[in-house]
Image 1 (cartoon, rainbow, N blue to C red):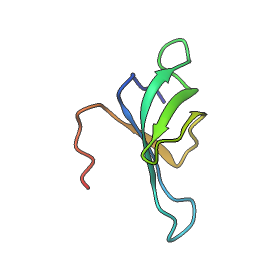
Image 2: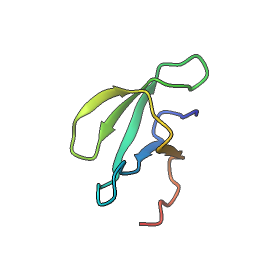
Image 3: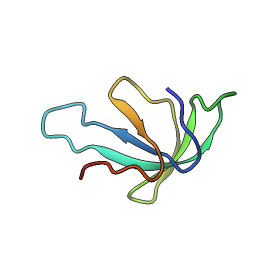
Image 4: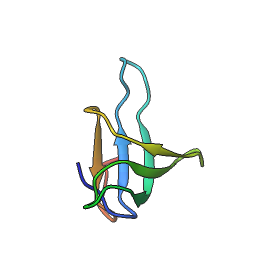
Amino acid sequence: MRAHDGDHLVVEGAKVGSPRREGEVIETHGSHGEPPFLVRWSDGAECLVYPGPDAHVEPAGASSGR
């Protein structure tokens, strides 16, 4: 998985009925855009993330279909 600053990280709910989390990638810390990513979540919290298989990156400016 690779991302650029400004892309969006989407993590689908791990359990049925769990909400998805969405946030903006503020920084990539891998050598070529790989994780970990510093993410600012929609609730304002920021953390370093190593995305799992339930996550995907949406390029900045792309419509998420919401």
